[in-house]
Length: 177
Image (tube, rainbow, N blue to C red; front, side, top):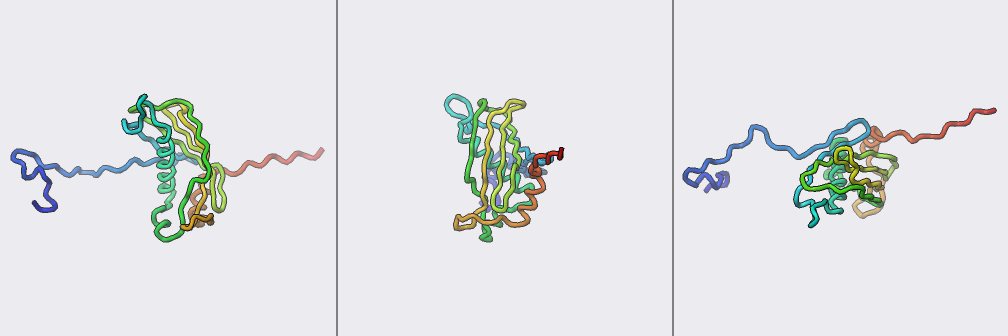
């Protein structure tokens, strides 16, 4: 059999597979103003014995949404890592579970950047099933060099994040009396 031949080609009466007219693409999120929305479905592998989503899977989903956000912002994590520039690392996370997700639920991860620094940012991520809040995470990400030490993120990355980071609210200056 040639390397390009499909195994069913040698089975009498079998119909060889036909390449789809359009290749399937992995799920992608969308930017909605300052929010990043990333939808996913709960599969059997995501659940525990009781039929609800295993708690650690929310961390995986949040990570997937953050990676997608970077991609949509034009940030190439792989190229930066291969060039020795560095990578984002979670340095702090607080996670609160509100309601369970179950098999076949559609979950929407909403991510926002709350604060941006030279080498870090603070984010909030929410997991929803419809209008029901399932989990909430607040985290701090640090940009680190290949040796693990903090490093200023590339200027282009900071500019991309700044475009979706709300300005820091300053308290109004009181009027003189």
